[in-house]
Image (tube, rainbow, N blue to C red; front, side, top):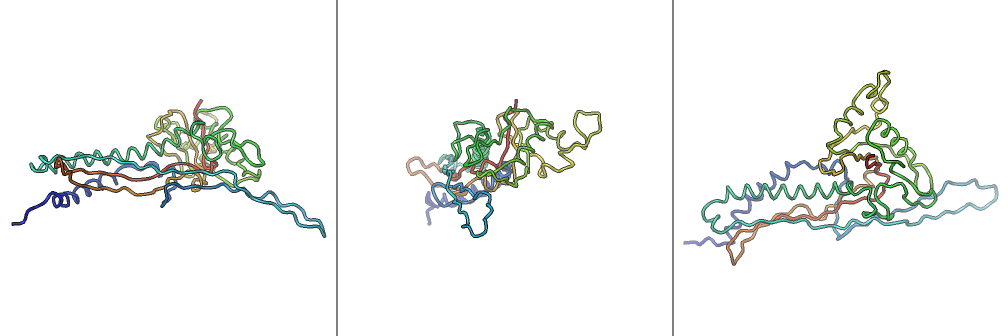
Length: 304
């Protein structure tokens, strides 16, 4: 008569746990995908280097030599991947007493929720720390600040000089500021706002500002220019992991070169028996990093 070994039992249980885990994880809302462009990585970290362009071309006088210009590396943004992992164990007795279905479904759903939660927090923390000099980017400045250094354009800003709350006026001023973005050689950059990212506390305010046909709070029947000009073509999204209740962020069409999530290794699950205790151990892990490169991908205010 064949004897079922502990390792064989693990193989019998593993498919069920994997299926339950996958179903639970795929149903979780992936709010980071509204903010970050996703890329894959096969190294311990990724680096992106800012290269300066050329200055404006000059007039060449007849018979004279052409002028030369050079480009240089200004700074480097680094994305260092982290390993995120969590595990649980089912006792040998629970397996023997056929409690697998009851316990595994409960614990697997909880494990999936924990993995998804951590990923959302990691992503949102890029914005939660966007105004803090303790979390600098490649240029040694916070993601959102009024003094990003440049080669020839002086200090550049992606934040209002005076912090403001979300309003029609603050959004209009932000659109003007974004339209004035320049590169490190002080040449205008054709960048446009795409999407407003807000905490849940500002959802009603954003709805009134962006969806009303007429100006909010006015009896003059003036057109809501933000809506009629389609200044934010992707509207607004609520991120439930933002911690500042009055901060708001505007993503530009430079998101692909700015806010990024590198996936080093996708979610992986594994199961093995413990020889000493007989417990069945189930583990989930993945490797990724969130960060930013070009600060022109975003404009924001911490609120008044």
